[in-house]
Length: 85
Image 1: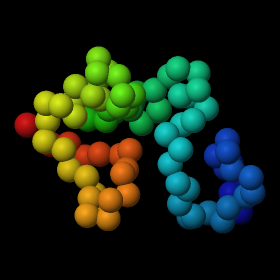
Image 2: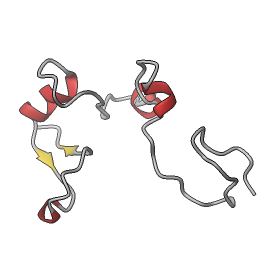
Image 3: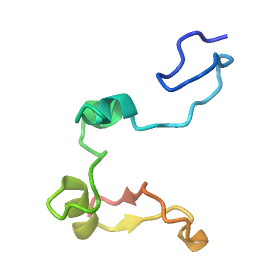
């Protein structure tokens, strides 16, 4: 068993079990970026408020080509893929 579970984990998981990403909720509640966004060496990950027109993520969504995984299912995701140009 893996005793080092996520902060929101309520039980130990067997080693090798993949956890669902919570976008480091303990960090975002403190006003920080998730660890993956902060440590990305090329700045490929963006995180922010989609409703704020001045946010970095909103500007990326407006200026870059965006791909939504399984858009035809109309699940209205909050996770998007974008192309460099």
